[in-house]
Each structure stands twice: as structure tokens, then as C-alpha cells.
Amino acid sequence: MAHQAEREEIENKKFVDYKDVPYLRQFMNPHAKILGKKRSGISASRQREIALAIKRARYMALLPYLAA
Image 1 (cartoon, rainbow, N blue to C red):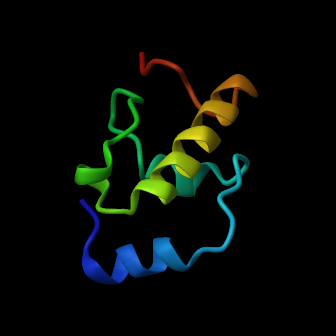
Image 2 (image 1 turned 45 degrees about the vertical axis):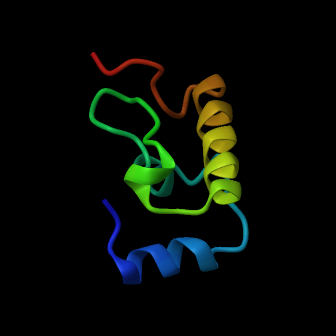
Image 3 (image 1 turned 180 degrees about the horizontal axis):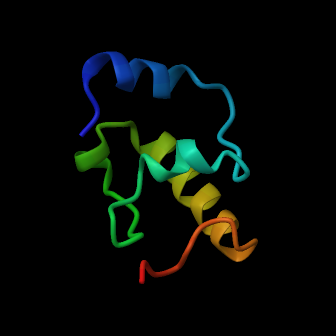
């Protein structure tokens, strides 16, 4: 769960890039599932952007679909 300072940093980031794997891993649990917006503490619009970026990164094989 993100704290207030981390949440502000996340919200202030201008563009969510699918190639920024360490940033996207913050929003995934150890089983490679995308965390919900309640759990991550970000706005709904930012959550949709992050979910789309994670899905693109999975398609490009930068992130796993399943954690083995």
C-alpha cells in the first residue's frame, strides 16, 4: 500500500510508460496480478493507465502473465 508521499509522486508522474518495468511492478502483487485502486491508493484514471501499461508490457514479454 502506498503512503501519502508515494501516492503524490505517483499522481505527479506525467506519463505511464509500459517500458518502465520497476515502476509497473509497484502495482502488481507477488503472483503478478494487478492491484486494485483501493489497494494501491491511486485515482481511477491513473489506475486505468497503469493497467493498460501493464497489459502492454505483458504482451511485449517485459512482465510475466503468471508468477511461477
